[in-house]
Length: 169
Image (cartoon, rainbow, N blue to C red; front, top):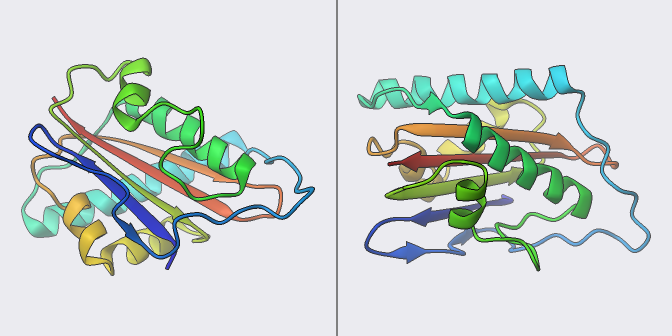
């Protein structure tokens, strides 16, 4: 299973906790990313958030609110993963999650979290993958999170890339 997660809380930073390999390098001479059509990406992002909120409701958590700042942060990171054809929370020269979301406008965060996936072709398959992982499920179903942004991109080789950024101020 290729999925990663990061959780940044007020007292501790858990970074690089991982399920599966840490990175998947692109073959030499790999083509650059082909952006997902805007309408397709928007639908996938909306669907994945809807499914996560349905799972949160079953647990008794409030729905996550979509924040444009977290959407921007997750979308930029997703596009970077698609171009690099590598699953990673932070690429060389890229800012940390906290800095990325603040630069996108989500400031004053007390909690931040991020889950990633490479491969699932539908929102439901991405959410199923995360929910089958104890660590990812715990992060997505943490009732303390209040805000969300989702990113979805397709790389030149047709692989799908997913980023969910979670926050609480």
